[in-house]
Every structure is written in structure tokens, then in C-alpha cells.
Image (cartoon, rainbow, N blue to C red; front, side):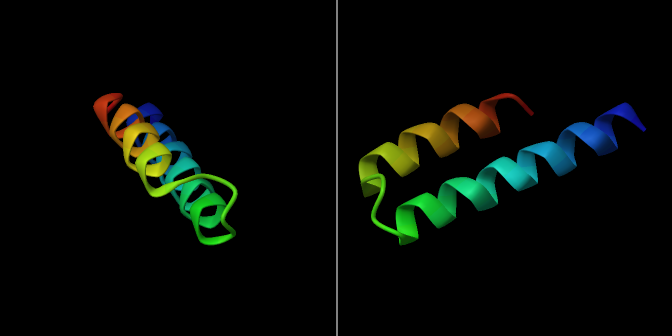
Length: 42
């Protein structure tokens, strides 16, 4: 259950990050860097 909750949180963070990029609030480089940081938590 804990891992399931963590993965849903990570999914939400990735979706939020993508939304920021799509709205132009962060650059492609910032998006890629932060995305990798989030994925490294898995």
C-alpha cells in the first residue's frame, strides 16, 4: 500500500510538472531536470 501511494504521488507530481511546462512557466531544461529528480525517487 505504501508503494502504491508513493507512485500515485509521483504520478501527480509528474503531471503537475508537465502542466507547468505546457503553460510556459518552466523551460524544457527545467522540466527534464526536475522530471529526472522525481523519477530517481522511485
